[in-house]
Length: 60
Image 1: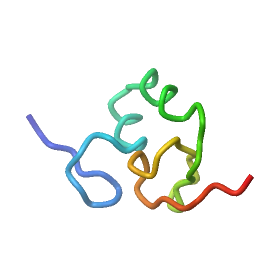
Image 2 (image 1 turned 90 degrees about the vertical axis):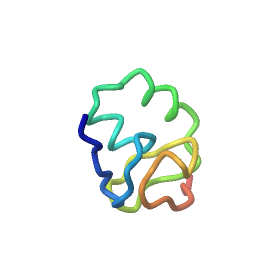
Image 3 (image 1 turned 120 degrees about the vertical axis):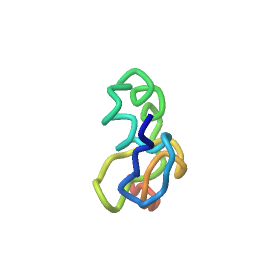
Image 4 (image 1 turned 60 degrees about the vertical axis):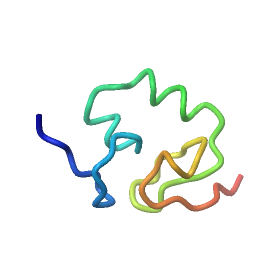
C-alpha cells in the first residue's frame, strides 16, 4: 500500500487536505465545526492546528 505524502511534506493522514483526498468527509465535518485556526496554504478552517499543514490563528 502506498503512503501518501501530505502537502506539508509529511507522511501522515490527519490533515484536512489528506482526509479530503481519501474521501473522509464526515471526519472533516467533525474537525471543522468550531474552527480556531486557518491554514495559510489553502485557507481551510479547522478546530485544531494539528488538522492543517500551515496553521495560523483564525481572526474572527
